[in-house]
Length: 257
Image 1 (cartoon, rainbow, N blue to C red):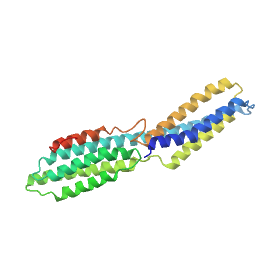
Image 2 (image 1 turned 60 degrees about the vertical axis):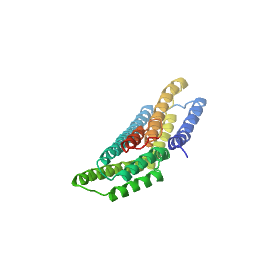
Image 3 (image 1 turned 90 degrees about the horizontal axis):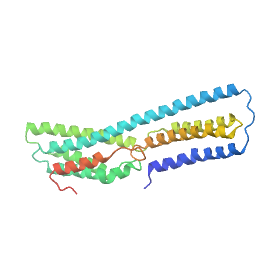
Image 4 (image 1 turned 135 degrees about the vertical axis):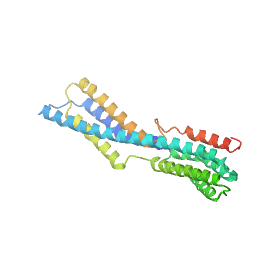
């Protein structure tokens, strides 16, 4: 099993970090040539930096919005589990369905959370959820009141289905490969333009370059981190699933492991 976040970060370090170190070593050892038309060169360089900054900002904001959406859906799925567990106590013949709900919640905690670190969903949780739907359709209803409760149960299952779909789509990657390619290409162009606009004083040049490279690499690191919302330094809080598992188990009258 591989950790999707560290796999992405290692690739980023190799693709961006190594060329940056190579540039700094070469730039330190070689004197800067005299620059002709300095004002025009700096203007072009500033224009490129502005466009590249806007591009990085758009990618960062998009992933932040996506991260918050996944966080909300994780909470909603857990709430739907607990809500369904409470509603099942209003049905006269729901023992099998209660056990099915507990089995699904347990499979999410035991298998789905681990699978999400690889950017996928576990087959065990998918099978338990399919079985839960079948049990919900097959449950016998004895009164109008139970029919009303049953409709609410199906509503909770529908909400859980939508939230599972969000997790399935968003778990692996949310940054299109073309966007990442443009981020890498833009960084290489920035290295080239920095080389072409060097000044003669090495200390001054390093004082300008090091904070800039560090800041851009940190932003790209955050982008890569948010690209995998369930694993990394900044990740979705999945403790709600543990809480839902505990609550539906207690509501079903079963022993909590």
